[in-house]
Every structure is written in C-alpha cells, then in structure tokens.
Length: 205
Image (tube, rainbow, N blue to C red; front, side, top):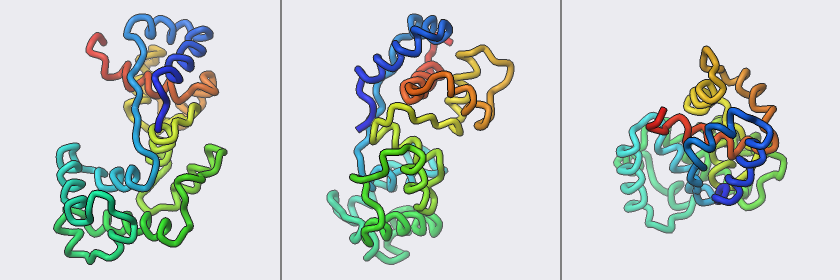
C-alpha cells in the first residue's frame, strides 16, 4: 500500500520546517489524503486498461475483464484468452500486447511484485521492462502501491502545474527542470508529489 496519512504528515512537516512556501500552503489547505493502491500486477494491469480513455470507460473495461476472467484471475487466465475475447472486453490490439507483456513476465517468474529492488531507480527499471509501462506509470505504482517516500513523478502534468503555482513560477516546469527543483525536498518527495495534486485540485486556488 501507499504512504499512510501519518507518513504524509511527517514528510510534509519535515519539508515545511525548511520551506516557507510549502509551510504557508500547508497551513492554508491542510494535508492531502493518502492515495492507496494494492501491490501487485492487477494495479499495473488497471493502469494499462485505463491508458488514454476516460475513468468511466476504464472502469467499464475492467468490469468486463473481471467478468470474463473471474474476480481472482491470475496472469495465466488472461494469457489463455484469444484476441477476440479480450477485444470484447474493450482491449485494443495495443493494450492486449501490453497486458500480455505484463502477464508473461509474471507467469515466467521474471517479475516479482513482492521482491522489487529496494533501490528506486532499479525498481523503475524493472517495471519499465513491461511494454506500455513508462517511467511515469512505474513511479505512480511505486508511490501509491509501495509507499516509496521519495518517489517524484516529475513527468506528471498536474505535479508540474502544482509546483508552478506552489513556487509562483512564471512557466510550468518541464520534467527535467522539475527533477532539479525536487532535489530540495529529498527524501520526502513522495508526500510533496501528493500535496501538489491536492494543491492543484484545491477549489480555493
């Protein structure tokens, strides 16, 4: 599971004690809610299913997939289904390729979600072996499902926009610049990332 409310609070308090802008906004809008996802391949499979479609469409596709495979389906269950069966669940040819890549790695014992490398960069490298899973998806998984406290999804547009507003920058920072900006918040970049989503979505802004 991801970072708990207490871990987020502790991380934010540590950053706020060193960063006046963060402290001011934290006092104004409060702590963000935890974002928790289950550890394991199903969370990444849901990420693949949800790529480039609305939340409602992704939920519909997932429900159809679970109805076809069974609620407690294994990677092998998906691998046994043919193209047309998965297509009827809403999975395009591309998404089927990504889903099969994920399930084949697990089925072959080449990817173990219970034993990802402790080093964040090595864990990202392990996850991005899956077709269709880029750095952003890997970072989001490690933050929400494993609760890695220093994860910094700098390619996320909402994080970029949130940091722009938080630091009162003239332009939204690109990924490379945001990685440099984030260095000041180590080793608590995970709580800050969650805070930027909270800050970005806050109606008081």
